[in-house]
Image (cartoon, rainbow, N blue to C red; front, side):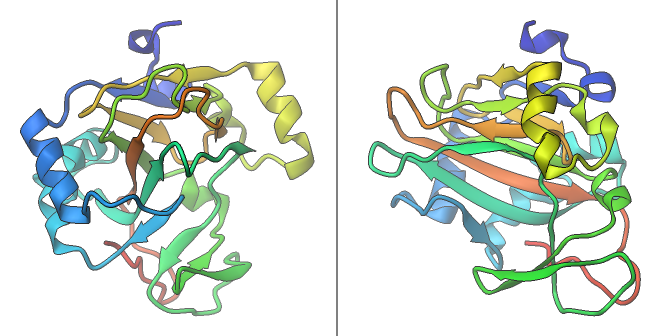
Length: 224
């Protein structure tokens, strides 16, 4: 299957080529710096990201195409693989969100702190209404740890941990290659993974979660 054949509503993923121009990619690099980052650097309070990620920015427009005009960024993480920092991540579903403060609300939990930020696992219905965008800063070929997804796995709900590997094997995977400036859109609950790069080269990806609805019970998205 070619990337162009993927349909977001059916498969849970879609490639948007050349959303950022080379000049915009260079400007984005200036915002978060060119020094190598850690495996997953959570970004918050960086005003320079807002023109890209909030409406009417180019990345926000992709999210709004699916979620509507109220779509807003609620979490941003920078992944920066290099020849010396080259990790793998097995099949999984993203299951947590970031909020400003902890409030005990039915269906939310367990709670955790990551990089000093308050995370919580929400009801799966909330994750099912979110999308995740991966903004590619560097090209990602087949040997440079491209994202792997399991098309249509977003449709089957929360997958028990012990069934994830078998589900991925049964449903089959797709390799999300990309050029710098491309954006991959996928349903936040989709099964995904990333191998270590076989031929390591720098691979920076800005991953941004979007939501269009407020949280219940006094909980508030942290945002970016």
